[in-house]
Structure formats: C-alpha cells, structure tokens
Image (cartoon, rainbow, N blue to C red; front, side, top):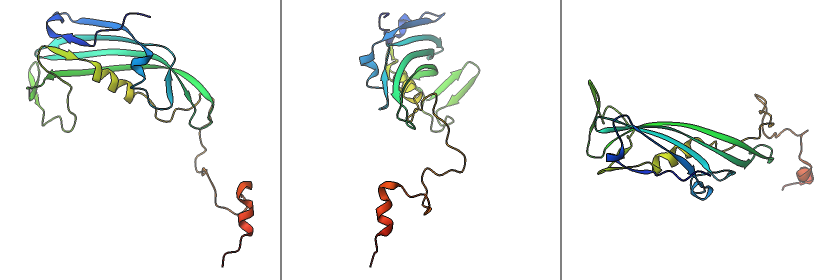
Length: 176
C-alpha cells in the first residue's frame, strides 16, 4: 500500500505547471463513503492533478478501488473494480464570478450547480473525493451474471393461475 495522499493542499505549494497528489486511502477511510451494499476489498488508489487558472484551481484525477457486494437481483456475492474520473474547478469562497481567461461567468449563470470553493490559503479535496466516490456507486448493484428483467414482465402477478404456494390457502378463505 502506498502512503495516503495529502488531501488538504496549501495553495503556495501548487507551482505554475501544476501539482500531482497520489497515494492510497485505507479501507477504514472508505467505510464512511461506501453505500450499504458495498465493502472495500482494497485500498483506494488516488491520483489528483491541481493546476492554477487565475484565482481558480482546476482539479482533475482518478480513483480506483475494488469492492464486493451482494447482487440486488439474485442475492449472489460479487465484486468489481470501480474506476472513477473526476474533474472540478474550485474557486475562492468570496468570488461570485469565474474568470475563464477572456470570458467571465457569474454564479447566477451557473444555475443550481454550486461550484466547489476553497477558503484562505488552502484547498480541502476530501469532500470532493468523497462526493465523487458516492456518486459513482450504483445503489442497487447487480451480479455480472444477473439477467435483465424482460420488458413488459411484471415482478409479480395477480392472475389466479399463478398463486404463490405460501398463500394458496387464502384462496379458499370466505369473507362475510
């Protein structure tokens, strides 16, 4: 396992050509960000590049980790490798516009998408990494061999000829 990456970066440590941050986050760190069906089977490998664009910081990177889960359709155990690409433009907390060299975009023009911000002379990447991990997880993972449900077929039926044997005695029940 590689050394865990530093996720709080002082801005004065980001040179003009950029800064690469990398390492492995332990399974204990992942436990807070994995959805209920998942368990980490390996540390999460993190590679992040930071580059200054004016007062903004462009953050791009990738996350790789192995997870195990129980199939939501069959209940069979399975595992998979998650590969996550991430990219975000961080801006100073007191800024209401983003300067993209010749064009400025105000925060009102962004609509409901709130940009990630940094405050003071450091940038905290942990919330961004956690959010990227959470959004990449399927809340109902399926086994690689699980069959897709057929179009138009119901998961259950109320037709009389298809009675679940556990409920068969109820058909003889007379209600008054």
